[in-house]
Length: 144
Length: 473
Image 1 (cartoon, each protein chain N blue to C red):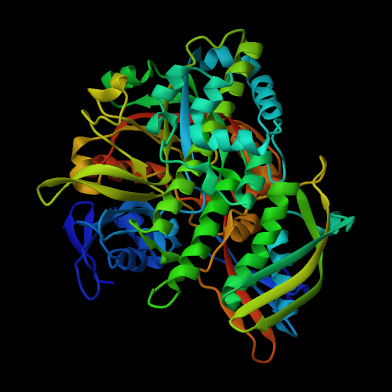
Image 2 (image 1 turned 45 degrees about the vertical axis):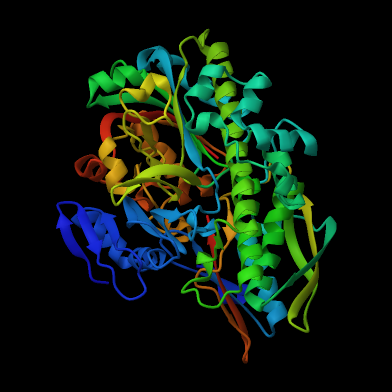
């Protein structure tokens, strides 16, 4: 079981992968959720932050924002072969009834020799929790 | 949840509360224990509450908890006042299985098994982040999504007879690639002709047991020891993106209030959005058909190269596991067209149905049920009874019972490879960790699943196949 100091931990969930990610604020918890997601597919320590991709998503509520944000990791993987190393400059703000997230992903393209493991098909709303009072926490189940 | 046993392998959740129809679960004592531990029954109950649902919400023997709809769930909706739901199809649209027969025996293949498997691994791209060998333009990808396996055959991958032996003849004509989002297309372009990872696999198998020799012969299975090839994969990132796109679009249109579970989000079948999802889903279905068609072609090429011939490597059948489609069924004595959702379930049509190819029409369709990595898989026969019992559906596989995390904690990939080698099974994989996560112990007992299917009569046993060589993505 990874240590909580990593910013996330996994739970036994029969059919899927379920994790919680933590942070001093929502931005940090989202960032750690992206790291938890990446940890299912590759070892971030073995990826170099060689290039950056801007990320901008918007949503009608925080849960949709989290789903859309994490889907960016899967989208960049499938379309560009991009493996996430780090999430930087993450901001979340509310504008009227929309939630906006801006960030930058750093990482590298997939290359032979770098081990990738299991597939993640999608981010789901199943059992999703977002806590913003005190320490921020997000809970996510992904479809594997 | 109160379950009433109404047959040796049949349990019912009586209609109550907001349920519009009852729910029926096909299961055994053993399998039911697992089902009771998770949310399967609650999810089946939720499905039974959806607008326009017909007759009964069904749960197949391999069921486990899904998102919104249970995995192993079958539901039919009225075309006038019913709904269509991406959650009722699943994220991996047309995840499915294709089975090829061969003229080879296990003895023929044994001396060259390692070489054969290694060559397949070289020819068929697999694993997370691994792109296909073909670079497509957006226009060609749209063509693939419009034509499905037909596109592949037109471009030299396989034969027309493969199309005949594919569900929907390898193409859903309802597909409209123009509705696919740019992201779905971008995710699809590098992934055509790739196996993927996770639970997807390609196996060289041998026939291990024949229960129904006459049907087996019609399906092209002659004798114990005959070599078969099974390909299990789906629509890759393109299909996942379609599901995510329309869950979002339907949420934005209808809001998320009023649903017991956000993943049950849906649109009326008659609505513009419902129709658009159906067209996009059909495009993803076609992508998956083309994908398996290409992989099958490469497998034949490898057999020809390594063993000298691919003669007689005909397709037995190709079935979808995650799909929605319009079918005619008898409901309360009246034949009607309805929108069937099969999520983690296989169509199991009996004799006479126009949807199944002529070669099988007197018998019923082949139903292919893959086991987990290194365990047996089964070939079943669709039945007429299934039409009344489950809208012509049965189970789709083993179904996970343990998280990937837990599997990794308990098993080691290298050990699994050794154990399989001890049983005479060769394994090649892109990742040891991936192997440990897919340990067969992390899955339900597929033997029990097909036994229940057979006993209930929704898919009858024809043959069992066991792996001799496993390629895991």
